Image 1 (spheres, rainbow, N blue to C red):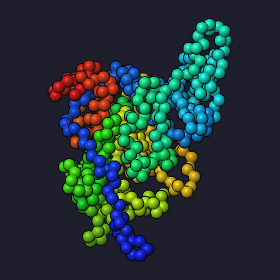
Image 2 (cartoon, rainbow, N blue to C red; image 1 turned 60 degrees about the horizontal axis):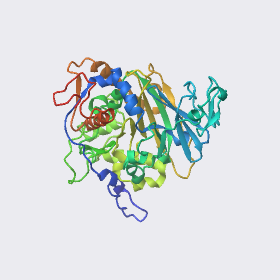
Image 3 (spheres, helix red, strand yellow; image 1 turned 30 degrees about the horizontal axis):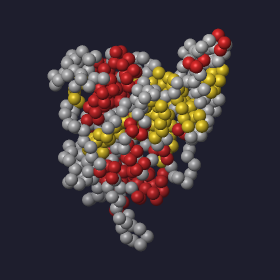
Image 4 (cartoon, rainbow, N blue to C red; image 1 turned 135 degrees about the horizontal axis):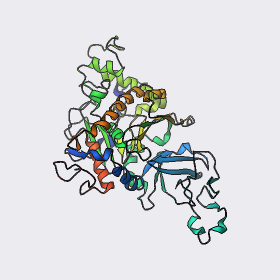
Length: 473
């Protein structure tokens, strides 16, 4: 059921909301095939350079602000072999420090905690207040002329967007707002303020693959045809006319092709594989071929009537009558987003947020965070954020039952990535090929990756020389 099918109390059809302004903004990424060297997925030299040029210099999401609500509440953020303390130092202030004692380098903090007043090294007892000032320099008399060097913990830059706390270890980094660009307009400006949601689920899975391999499995949507055959749309679906990838500086967004004749020509769409309306509806309800259809369409009835009604009912349960103010595109578009280097908040009414990062110093180990950020009525208190459910490298994602049916979907994705990691080493030519349209976000990621890694004139670490020019291009 679309919003135009509803009636007000007087029996009149209310005006249909305009097509979302943020989705009408187009910024197509330049077309072209991209060849990417396989070395960057497993050679230690790449991992070491990533630490220096990406993880020590780029903005990255570390936690939610509501996870450290009180002064002294603190989290640990770890990426590769780096560790940072993120602490609320005042009701309206959050700071972050490298997790190392300025005496002999022991980790200052071993675990997250509540209402700390200091960070004390458990090796020799030096301590700093949570605002970074020195509190106790045990045997300071034995370190003549050094007190000024250790009187304050070095700080990372900190920024907060929509409840997500970001840090950048580079003291000369641009402000977070500049790095994000117009990203907030596509959330708060579109009526989807993630700061007004609550962390319903948080799963962190360790995986035996490079962080870029698993991230790329979630960057493009073309794999859906084979990997997720239950996720399809019928050719008649109003938002199955094609998809487009739009690039906005440091981030990219997938959206449905505009439902007008004024937008640039889009491909037929990766999601259009159902041969009939009934088949698409069957897949929507996770139908098995040995079962009767959950809902049987009547002659002339469209799948979108059923799925829109179901989606609006779910959104209405969370928002009440406010759901009626949103165009159908908010319900169906998906709006996958990628903010370099590793942050993936979904737009619209999707709850999904991803993060991907290297685990320790092994280039073939990574962590994937999956969050479900759920809306809730403004007249009720926000529920407490869910604790992190950690999965070891030997645990399947389906052990995270709180993900519901998504656990099976992610299981399909993660079933590919180990085979990809192994297969990359068998490519004799030394590079993979990314398509012009469907894999545009993978191409954009590697273009940004080359920029941050210093490979703009060619990947000098690569042992492959793709045929279309400089190595890695």
